Amino acid sequence: MSTTLAGKIALVTGASRGIGRAIAERFAADGAVVGVHYGRNPQAADEVVAAIKAKGGDAFAVAAELTESGAAAKLFAQVDAELAKRGKKTFDILVNNAGVAPFVPFADTTEEQFDYVFNVNVKSLFFITQAAIPRLNDGGRIISTSSVVSRLPFPGVEVYSMSKPPVDNLTKALAKSLGERGITVNAVAPGVIETDMTGFVKSDEGTQQTLNMQALKQIGQAPEIADVVAFLAGPDARWITGQTIEVSGGTVITL
Ligand SMILES: NC(=O)c1ccc[n+]([C@@H]2O[C@H](COP(=O)([O-])OP(=O)(O)OC[C@H]3O[C@@H](n4cnc5c(N)ncnc54)[C@H](OP(=O)(O)O)[C@@H]3O)[C@@H](O)[C@H]2O)c1
Image (tube, rainbow, N blue to C red; front, side, top):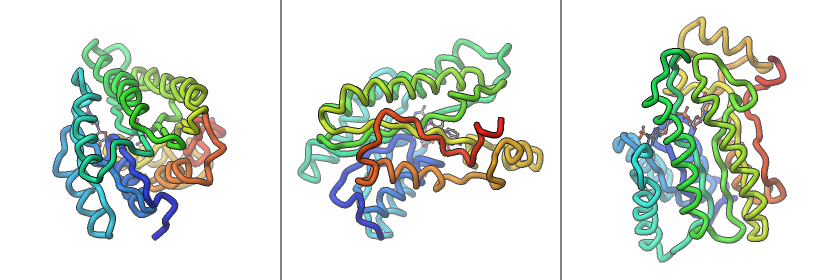
């Protein structure tokens, strides 16, 4: 067990499944107490908390449906209560990871679908970050999950492709304003990672299409991203801020 995050408290949004779960488990393995945020899936979040505790770590689940207005306030009411149980008012690491990517042809995309993607991927991320900053310790970390679609927008996920550049832009803007407090602000941009979001990689055709897009010829798994997020959260990344780091097996260089 590593101790690079010992004594740190982290909040990971969308940690009940996929990439967020891998980040939460990796942070806990590195010694952090982890807030496991979920939306609709309390059982999955409880499983993550139980898995962390079974390995000797500490974690707690917090719920907030991110399409709802006031989601950030609801989330932080629970975070504040969990911090208070541990005698704290502040924490160290925010990971904005929750996201949605419905595959809908451009011509069929409805206003409701557009709002859904922007509410989860952009608006909630903005207001969760806004609420987190006064609670973050100096020297803390903000890390967000962007995507290669910021540089490589795909047909069929136009709204999703539009929703990730704002993450990169907020990362840069906040890196400038939070530098005085020693808080670093970065993003990771995964390529295709096998999760519930990317059911297509489970078919032979989807696997082949994905491998054709990448320099490295295997299907990326959630720990591939979690390991880089753990690096950005840890002391070795202290001089990196305002960056979006692509973690994609070399997707952009091949297209
Ligand atoms: N997988 C990829 O290939 C890939 C590539 C590039 C970027 N990304 C980004 O990586 C992040 C995680 O993706 P993933 O593949 O791990 O997705 P996933 O397996 O579908 O998990 C999504 C997570 O976000 C939460 N979430 C979704 N909608 C929510 C809502 N309305 N309110 C509250 N929570 C909500 C889910 O919680 P509940 O289940 O509890 O609702 C779940 O924990 C996203 O930002 C995604 O855009 C993924």
